[in-house]
Amino acid sequence: MKKFVLIALVLSTVLFLVANELSDRELEEQALKDMLSTLQYTAGSRFGNDLKVGDKVVYHVNTDFSSENQSEEFVSLEVIEESSKGIVIKESFDRNITYTTWDPVSNQIVDFYGYDENRCKQTPKLLHKSEVEANFSLVKSQASALIPFSFSQNDRAEYAVSVNSRDITCSKVNMEIPEMFKQKLAQDQLDQIEEESAMYFSDEIPKLIPFVEVTLSMLNSLETLNQQNKGFVKNSVLELIEFRKGN
Image (cartoon, rainbow, N blue to C red; front, side, top):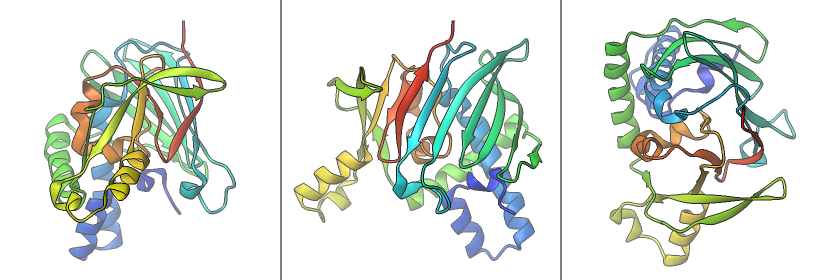
């Protein structure tokens, strides 16, 4: 049975574990640990410092990246509750639902659970802070070795992106291509890669960054997310189709 925790597997970790011939059980246990450490470490990069109950974003998934059994797929995040513990964020993706309670003061996830595609509840135990930092360091180093790309906002221009017939003012974040790759590619190929890898953000949108489709691809560039309190608008995988700001 496919569990929601396995959807968020970091590719580099999977390859590393397979290479070391771990058992299926050991693979799943390590995958869960990697997912949790990444989820906990990146929370402050994904969520804005001014979120309110009612903030919501909905994205349409490019059909090239959708599940084989679905003609259309959507990803959504919504702030559904605020308590003394923090704010509760509901995230829906690939027929899975997670509920994350994040404390913006301590910048820590204090509770996390979800339901997989078969509606079975999953309640993984969160990792201690020291374990999060140590394990995420390994995850990031593996990701950097296998995917040596990062994103930065070198382009200071503003772009208008239409969302439900409304123009949203966006900034663009580009993938930095290492020189060793640039030398092997023609300019038109470089231009195509730049356009297809570009990500658009806007301060008109609540900062609720999707975990699987956006954050995992930016593990080498979390500082780029940290530097701006802007919501995600689109890339080649996701496109914002609806958003709402709470009161």
